[in-house]
Image (tube, rainbow, N blue to C red):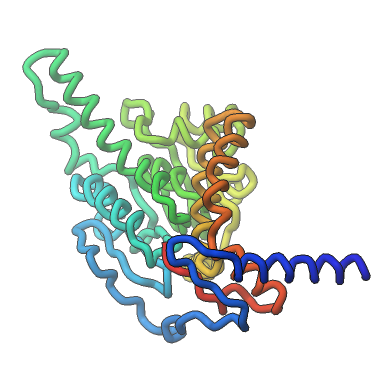
Length: 328
């Protein structure tokens, strides 16, 4: 008990030193009871349309304070991905990445399913009648086209804000490409997943074959799904690690996804976004390289005022949702 008391006193001394030491770039902190953050939206209030987000294939709303809801919005086409979608997802997530107020994102599908994948009717001319006067020029054009489609989902991964996929009904073909670029995946009991590309005569080329093996860590299962295009149902998706939770129906799943987003958004945005960036770096690099990257990252990020606020909240037994962290 004496050791705990001494440690607590030492932490208090460190906080006082940090708060009274000379600050940089106008950082001005004082040791006093932590104030509450600005009140969140009225519970149960309808989500409001997010400013600067107007799309043909997506609906973006401000679900709660610091949380954006990106909804695939072509329910009459089972949220199939048309030309507008491939362009608008890039525009949408580039804006979200720069949105200082946004701290978490939920992606879902409108209507009866998450997504039927690529809209072959709308995209047929691009894929089956590519531009070019000879094989070299056609190939050059197709490569550039595929790279632009890859960016549609890579932009989700590059966005520093955590992205939660909430999946119900079918998640087919390019839908799997999309969700594997997200950070967390929840699904409803009626969800199923299909790597569908072999059934339309091609190898998946915009993310599934690259990300799915890292997501579920079972190369045999990935090969089976990709070679056969069979359906993976919700319980198998949970058991394989593709999703982290399964819910009885869509609305319950969405409530849980927004609750998770709210929990994430209550934390320091410096800590959360830095964590996402370091996790992705570590996925693709050695342990030694990743440790070096983390040290370089935190040599500046450890100077944030958010550490002081978080530590002081812990000492005062306050929940982080009641603490004001500056936008990032």
